[in-house]
Image 1 (cartoon, rainbow, N blue to C red):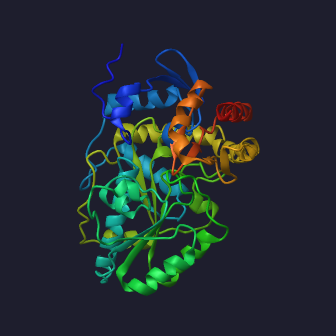
Image 2 (tube, one colour):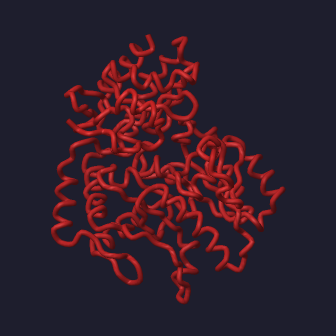
Image 3 (cartoon, rainbow, N blue to C red):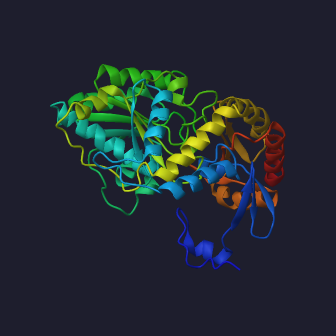
Length: 410
């Protein structure tokens, strides 16, 4: 019997967890997971947005094992790096939304966001504009839980109890380009370093971008010389449907892209920041030390996992399968909007969807109700149920998932 008392869970009321007991996940295969009692569940969220290629891929485990036998890792600082890390950087640069992008490795999504925030400010320092320090995020947005990401995000409850984390962070409306313009007019473009945008707001509740919004804010940043940072920790590596990145699908030409999750499909921790040539140039021209990095950034074992993961995504055409899921989720979940306990269904862009409950207070209990009907789900935002399955989930399994949600709704 596993002792579950020592673990402090993230994003949890530990009193409630201790009282009710945790949900112990024992194994996974494809789009399913099993608990420690042998019960099977459809994994509606691909772990935490990340298991793009599905559970139980021995190919990835074998690739990591072979790498660890050779060399597990070595520092990427200075001029060091393992051969596998160089190989992954080259492969990622080849699929980058902006040609010639440089790849800076991190240990995960929160690291990637903090890296981009620091680099944006340092870039402007090197360009002779040290007053450009303000970083801007949007309401509802989630950018990880490091200091910069927490300050940037538009989820007030995630900032409660910490005091002021980062005085140079601002928040604008999530769906209104004019709100960004008003901030620029108020603060002055010569003080703003970067604007961070999730193509699809993820943990904040799964909100799709209004028509034309992404192109509008991209153009605003161009006109005011503000770096445009696209947070693709959730949407990167195929989840947007049919493309490696949302930045590619919407032709955003970002200055930086933050990634993690789907890079390794969560088999081991890893993140990466894609940095366009414009931003990288001052640091590659010689004489500039950027004193930033992570012990495990570009970890050789993680790089091997990422390469194997990319192989699977390409070989099995899983980017196209994600596009299929975009259609399938919309088809099977949209009818739930007619249920009296459902306020709205948000779907139709990428392998993501949300079923917004009419009473947000029902969301957390509903997660446990879903388990009774064979579905492992998650609440997101204010009263929304998250759906972000692995790309290997079939249309029949999507139908099974929707039927289970309907039963849980009663």
